[in-house]
Amino acid sequence: MYEVKEAPSKIAHNTVIQIIGRVLFLALSLINFKVISVYLGPTLFGDYGNVFNFVALFTVLADFGLFTVAVREISKKPNSRQVILENVFTLRLVLALATSVLAMGVAYLLAWLLPNSGYPHLIPALYIGVFNMVIFFMGYVVDAAFHVELKMYFISLVELIGKAVAVVGAILAIVFKAGFLWIVAAVALGTLVSFVARLMYVKPYFKLKLGFDYKMWRWLMAMAVPLGIVFALNNLYFKIDSIMLYLISGSYATGIYTAAYRVLETIVFISVFFIAALTPYLSNYLEQKHNEARKLITVGVEILLATGAIITVALLFYSEEVILFLSGNAYLPAAVPLTLLAFVVTFLYVNSLLGQVLVLLDRRKLLITVSGAILLLNVALNFYLIPKFTFVGTAASTLICETLLLGTNLIIIRWNDLLNFRKKKFAYLGLSLSLATILFAAAKSINLFWIIPFFGIPALYFWLLWRQGVLPLNYISQQTAKAL
Image 1 (cartoon, rainbow, N blue to C red):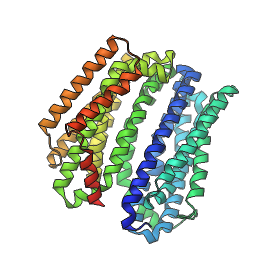
Image 2: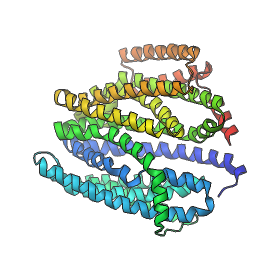
Image 3: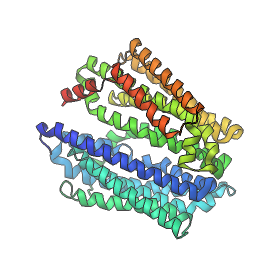
Image 4: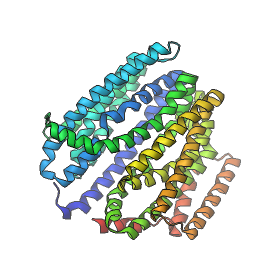
């Protein structure tokens, strides 16, 4: 374990490397996305997306909150790290294998019940997808040791190595015309290389062994299950719409929607990184300093709202250009669902922080109730909207659900007196956003090359907000320093 006095420098070191690693990872992901989507075309790309969306439905069952519990318990009992990790590793292996059997069983059932769907010919690709899931989650266990040692930059490094291998593998499959299965296999190859790299780097902190302490298994699962239920509901909520679209409207519609939704997934990393940085300090303040927690949450919401809002406006003006840049002419219909998903960006950013606050407050029953209700609404809306509007209906369903979830989260957080609405800050935000909108409209009207306003106007917008104190990054750094 690291010394407490070393924590600030270690966190700073981790943060810088993770930012660089994430940017490079994002760049490789975009290259991979472009290469595969253009080569496969919308129909086969829909099959490709469905393979990983289907497997993703079951991934939470292979984890069920074990990673979160492992990091927390090892932090409390550093001397028990080896014992905890080897039992978590074994337990997750058992869960992953059981989940794999369940996933393939459901796939065969769908292929039998719906012989005219894409599932009969997707079975071989789904085997590869399930293998990828098992390897991914076994490597993910090892990450707990890196987190406890404040060596998260190792995670960024091995993920970058894995993504590079996946990109090269996909390009080679395309060059040699190896076919659809090899495109899918390139992802699994990248995950496998990343797993091997993890095992090499983790040797000083964890000796790979299987642990069979069944009392510890029960103890771990007792703590993990409540979190696992929440994670499972959230995972279903984010993936079930794509599966329903595939079953109801087929491969082409799924390929178009996947092209739009991948833009959303690419952008989400900004909020994920920000919330991950705030979480340790929020946890500290929620337990001991209510007023500080409220102020930090308020500032966090303002920053995420400001960031999500400008991304929304940029996508509204340049949805076609973004789709053409990332996927090509064949995917141009994806610009329509992307305009709806553009609004989702803002709501999703804020919902991610508010949801994390509820997790830290241990509002498990409330989280399960809200997540379950939103999931049921999402399924009902998709059943109604997909037959009428295909991929546009799926995007509309996501937007409606995120809007309702935001309203619910705001009510709960306000009820717990953990959020202030500062009118002056919102006024500055509104004025800056209005100015940005005018500038976007002007740039669009004179046909200025889209990359320039797409990135230049947000840069000006953030500078204005920083000058007006709406983005008090110095406050965030001060509070994280205090929490240490």
